[in-house]
Length: 261
View 1 (cartoon, rainbow, N blue to C red):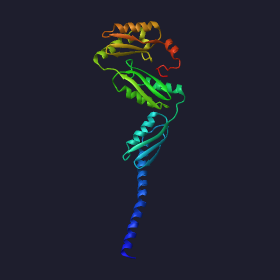
View 2: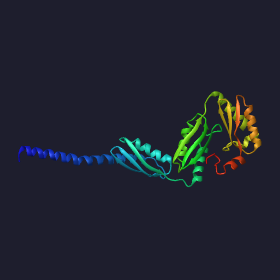
View 3: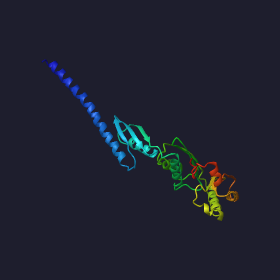
View 4: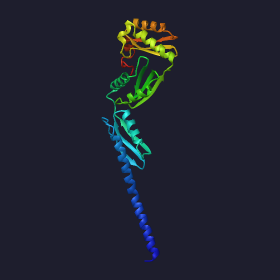
Protein backbone atom coordinates (compact mmCIF):
# COMPACT_ATOMS: atom_id res chain seq x y z
CA UNK A 1 0.00 0.00 0.00
CA UNK A 2 1.37 3.35 -0.97
CA UNK A 3 1.77 6.23 1.48
CA UNK A 4 -0.95 8.17 -0.36
CA UNK A 5 -3.39 5.28 0.04
CA UNK A 6 -2.65 5.08 3.81
CA UNK A 7 -3.31 8.79 4.25
CA UNK A 8 -6.56 8.49 2.31
CA UNK A 9 -7.79 5.63 4.49
CA UNK A 10 -6.88 7.56 7.66
CA UNK A 11 -8.86 10.60 6.51
CA UNK A 12 -11.85 8.41 5.64
CA UNK A 13 -11.70 6.81 9.09
CA UNK A 14 -11.64 10.24 10.77
CA UNK A 15 -14.72 11.39 8.82
CA UNK A 16 -16.53 8.15 9.67
CA UNK A 17 -15.83 8.57 13.38
CA UNK A 18 -16.85 12.25 13.26
CA UNK A 19 -20.15 11.69 11.50
CA UNK A 20 -20.97 8.69 13.68
CA UNK A 21 -20.24 10.54 16.92
CA UNK A 22 -22.13 13.76 16.03
CA UNK A 23 -25.69 12.30 16.18
CA UNK A 24 -24.83 10.48 19.40
CA UNK A 25 -23.51 13.68 20.98
CA UNK A 26 -26.60 15.62 19.84
CA UNK A 27 -28.89 12.96 21.30
CA UNK A 28 -26.99 13.09 24.58
CA UNK A 29 -27.30 16.90 24.71
CA UNK A 30 -31.03 16.64 24.00
CA UNK A 31 -31.42 14.10 26.79
CA UNK A 32 -29.54 16.33 29.23
CA UNK A 33 -31.69 19.36 28.36
CA UNK A 34 -34.86 17.28 28.63
CA UNK A 35 -33.88 16.17 32.13
CA UNK A 36 -33.25 19.80 33.09
CA UNK A 37 -36.69 20.85 31.89
CA UNK A 38 -38.39 17.91 33.62
CA UNK A 39 -36.63 18.74 36.90
CA UNK A 40 -37.89 22.33 36.71
CA UNK A 41 -41.43 21.20 36.02
CA UNK A 42 -41.34 18.70 38.90
CA UNK A 43 -40.24 21.25 41.51
CA UNK A 44 -43.76 22.67 41.87
CA UNK A 45 -46.34 20.41 43.49
CA UNK A 46 -49.43 20.90 41.36
CA UNK A 47 -52.40 18.58 41.69
CA UNK A 48 -53.47 17.16 38.34
CA UNK A 49 -50.40 18.57 36.59
CA UNK A 50 -49.00 16.24 33.92
CA UNK A 51 -46.79 17.41 31.08
CA UNK A 52 -44.65 15.40 28.68
CA UNK A 53 -41.52 16.97 27.21
CA UNK A 54 -39.51 16.34 24.08
CA UNK A 55 -36.29 18.12 23.09
CA UNK A 56 -34.67 18.59 19.72
CA UNK A 57 -31.72 20.92 19.56
CA UNK A 58 -32.62 23.84 21.81
CA UNK A 59 -36.36 23.56 21.20
CA UNK A 60 -38.68 22.04 23.79
CA UNK A 61 -42.09 20.63 22.92
CA UNK A 62 -44.70 20.31 25.67
CA UNK A 63 -47.72 18.01 25.36
CA UNK A 64 -50.40 16.88 27.78
CA UNK A 65 -53.62 17.99 29.46
CA UNK A 66 -53.69 20.43 32.38
CA UNK A 67 -56.52 21.66 34.63
CA UNK A 68 -56.34 25.40 34.01
CA UNK A 69 -54.78 28.28 32.12
CA UNK A 70 -52.47 28.92 35.08
CA UNK A 71 -50.98 25.43 34.81
CA UNK A 72 -50.41 25.87 31.09
CA UNK A 73 -48.71 29.26 31.44
CA UNK A 74 -46.67 27.99 34.40
CA UNK A 75 -45.30 25.06 32.40
CA UNK A 76 -44.40 27.19 29.40
CA UNK A 77 -42.70 29.80 31.58
CA UNK A 78 -40.66 27.22 33.52
CA UNK A 79 -39.58 25.47 30.34
CA UNK A 80 -38.62 28.78 28.70
CA UNK A 81 -36.56 29.81 31.72
CA UNK A 82 -34.51 26.60 31.69
CA UNK A 83 -30.86 27.20 30.83
CA UNK A 84 -30.13 26.12 27.27
CA UNK A 85 -33.71 26.38 25.99
CA UNK A 86 -34.11 28.72 23.02
CA UNK A 87 -37.77 28.15 22.15
CA UNK A 88 -40.83 26.31 23.47
CA UNK A 89 -43.63 24.79 21.40
CA UNK A 90 -46.78 24.11 23.40
CA UNK A 91 -49.42 21.54 22.50
CA UNK A 92 -50.84 21.65 26.02
CA UNK A 93 -54.61 21.46 26.28
CA UNK A 94 -56.80 22.57 29.17
CA UNK A 95 -59.32 20.17 30.65
CA UNK A 96 -62.96 21.17 30.20
CA UNK A 97 -64.86 22.50 33.21
CA UNK A 98 -67.70 20.53 34.78
CA UNK A 99 -70.27 22.50 32.79
CA UNK A 100 -70.86 26.24 32.21
CA UNK A 101 -72.50 26.87 35.59
CA UNK A 102 -69.58 25.35 37.47
CA UNK A 103 -67.19 27.52 35.46
CA UNK A 104 -69.22 30.69 36.20
CA UNK A 105 -69.35 29.85 39.91
CA UNK A 106 -65.61 29.27 40.00
CA UNK A 107 -64.84 32.60 38.32
CA UNK A 108 -67.29 34.48 40.57
CA UNK A 109 -65.76 32.88 43.66
CA UNK A 110 -62.25 33.84 42.52
CA UNK A 111 -63.34 37.48 42.21
CA UNK A 112 -65.29 37.54 45.49
CA UNK A 113 -62.44 36.04 47.49
CA UNK A 114 -59.84 38.49 46.19
CA UNK A 115 -58.74 40.19 49.44
CA UNK A 116 -58.32 43.63 47.82
CA UNK A 117 -61.74 43.66 46.15
CA UNK A 118 -63.55 46.53 47.89
CA UNK A 119 -66.74 48.57 47.65
CA UNK A 120 -64.75 51.01 45.50
CA UNK A 121 -64.29 48.37 42.78
CA UNK A 122 -66.87 46.72 40.57
CA UNK A 123 -65.96 43.69 38.46
CA UNK A 124 -68.26 41.52 36.40
CA UNK A 125 -67.52 38.83 33.86
CA UNK A 126 -68.78 37.03 30.82
CA UNK A 127 -67.79 33.59 29.52
CA UNK A 128 -67.88 32.32 25.97
CA UNK A 129 -66.24 29.05 24.88
CA UNK A 130 -64.40 28.91 28.24
CA UNK A 131 -62.84 32.34 27.55
CA UNK A 132 -63.48 34.74 30.44
CA UNK A 133 -63.77 38.49 29.89
CA UNK A 134 -63.44 40.65 33.00
CA UNK A 135 -65.28 43.98 32.82
CA UNK A 136 -65.45 46.87 35.25
CA UNK A 137 -63.43 49.40 37.20
CA UNK A 138 -60.89 48.98 39.99
CA UNK A 139 -58.87 51.30 42.19
CA UNK A 140 -55.18 51.72 41.45
CA UNK A 141 -53.47 49.82 44.25
CA UNK A 142 -52.34 47.07 44.24
CA UNK A 143 -52.14 45.69 40.68
CA UNK A 144 -55.75 44.52 40.66
CA UNK A 145 -55.99 43.64 36.94
CA UNK A 146 -52.87 41.48 37.26
CA UNK A 147 -54.02 39.88 40.50
CA UNK A 148 -57.49 39.10 39.18
CA UNK A 149 -56.04 37.64 35.99
CA UNK A 150 -53.93 35.23 38.02
CA UNK A 151 -56.79 34.24 40.33
CA UNK A 152 -59.20 33.58 37.48
CA UNK A 153 -56.54 31.72 35.50
CA UNK A 154 -56.40 29.14 38.32
CA UNK A 155 -60.09 28.27 37.96
CA UNK A 156 -60.39 24.77 36.45
CA UNK A 157 -61.60 24.90 32.86
CA UNK A 158 -60.67 28.53 32.12
CA UNK A 159 -58.91 28.50 28.75
CA UNK A 160 -58.30 32.19 28.20
CA UNK A 161 -58.82 35.61 29.82
CA UNK A 162 -59.52 39.03 28.35
CA UNK A 163 -58.97 41.81 30.88
CA UNK A 164 -61.18 44.82 30.21
CA UNK A 165 -60.73 46.62 33.52
CA UNK A 166 -60.46 50.39 33.87
CA UNK A 167 -58.05 51.52 36.60
CA UNK A 168 -59.33 54.55 38.52
CA UNK A 169 -57.21 57.54 39.46
CA UNK A 170 -55.57 57.45 42.91
CA UNK A 171 -55.94 61.23 43.24
CA UNK A 172 -56.34 62.56 46.77
CA UNK A 173 -59.62 64.32 45.95
CA UNK A 174 -61.27 61.09 44.83
CA UNK A 175 -59.79 59.22 47.80
CA UNK A 176 -61.44 61.70 50.18
CA UNK A 177 -64.78 61.32 48.41
CA UNK A 178 -64.49 57.51 48.63
CA UNK A 179 -63.86 57.67 52.36
CA UNK A 180 -66.75 60.11 52.94
CA UNK A 181 -69.12 58.07 50.78
CA UNK A 182 -68.28 54.84 52.59
CA UNK A 183 -68.90 56.48 55.98
CA UNK A 184 -72.15 58.05 54.78
CA UNK A 185 -73.58 54.93 53.16
CA UNK A 186 -72.33 52.11 55.33
CA UNK A 187 -72.58 54.21 58.49
CA UNK A 188 -76.30 54.71 57.89
CA UNK A 189 -78.49 52.31 59.93
CA UNK A 190 -80.43 51.28 56.83
CA UNK A 191 -77.27 49.90 55.22
CA UNK A 192 -75.65 48.02 58.10
CA UNK A 193 -77.06 44.79 56.65
CA UNK A 194 -75.12 45.37 53.42
CA UNK A 195 -71.68 45.25 55.05
CA UNK A 196 -69.80 42.33 53.52
CA UNK A 197 -72.60 41.54 51.08
CA UNK A 198 -71.72 40.97 47.45
CA UNK A 199 -72.50 42.60 45.13
CA UNK A 200 -73.94 45.00 47.72
CA UNK A 201 -73.46 48.72 47.08
CA UNK A 202 -70.31 49.70 45.20
CA UNK A 203 -69.11 53.30 45.17
CA UNK A 204 -67.23 54.16 41.99
CA UNK A 205 -65.57 57.57 42.05
CA UNK A 206 -63.88 59.22 39.07
CA UNK A 207 -62.84 62.89 39.22
CA UNK A 208 -65.72 63.77 41.53
CA UNK A 209 -68.32 61.85 39.52
CA UNK A 210 -69.93 58.98 41.42
CA UNK A 211 -71.54 55.84 40.03
CA UNK A 212 -73.50 53.59 42.37
CA UNK A 213 -73.29 49.96 41.24
CA UNK A 214 -74.59 46.70 42.60
CA UNK A 215 -77.81 45.58 44.21
CA UNK A 216 -80.08 46.61 47.09
CA UNK A 217 -83.01 44.81 48.63
CA UNK A 218 -85.63 47.49 48.13
CA UNK A 219 -86.39 50.56 46.06
CA UNK A 220 -86.36 52.63 49.27
CA UNK A 221 -82.71 51.63 49.86
CA UNK A 222 -81.87 52.62 46.31
CA UNK A 223 -83.34 56.10 46.85
CA UNK A 224 -81.63 56.48 50.23
CA UNK A 225 -78.19 55.58 48.86
CA UNK A 226 -78.67 58.08 46.05
CA UNK A 227 -79.56 60.85 48.50
CA UNK A 228 -76.49 60.17 50.66
CA UNK A 229 -74.19 60.23 47.64
CA UNK A 230 -75.60 63.54 46.41
CA UNK A 231 -75.07 65.15 49.84
CA UNK A 232 -71.44 64.02 50.08
CA UNK A 233 -68.96 66.91 49.92
CA UNK A 234 -66.98 67.03 46.67
CA UNK A 235 -69.40 64.96 44.61
CA UNK A 236 -70.21 66.65 41.28
CA UNK A 237 -72.77 64.25 39.89
CA UNK A 238 -74.32 60.88 40.78
CA UNK A 239 -75.24 58.11 38.34
CA UNK A 240 -77.40 55.67 40.27
CA UNK A 241 -77.18 52.25 38.60
CA UNK A 242 -78.27 50.30 41.65
CA UNK A 243 -80.83 47.61 40.99
CA UNK A 244 -83.04 45.77 43.40
CA UNK A 245 -82.54 42.06 43.89
CA UNK A 246 -85.85 41.42 42.14
CA UNK A 247 -84.75 43.43 39.11
CA UNK A 248 -81.44 41.56 38.88
CA UNK A 249 -83.10 38.16 39.07
CA UNK A 250 -85.68 39.13 36.47
CA UNK A 251 -83.08 40.55 34.09
CA UNK A 252 -80.62 37.65 34.29
CA UNK A 253 -81.81 34.62 36.23
CA UNK A 254 -78.76 32.63 35.09
CA UNK A 255 -76.27 35.25 36.25
CA UNK A 256 -74.12 34.59 39.30
CA UNK A 257 -74.29 36.97 42.28
CA UNK A 258 -70.89 38.42 41.36
CA UNK A 259 -72.09 39.28 37.86
CA UNK A 260 -70.48 36.38 36.00
CA UNK A 261 -72.51 34.71 33.27
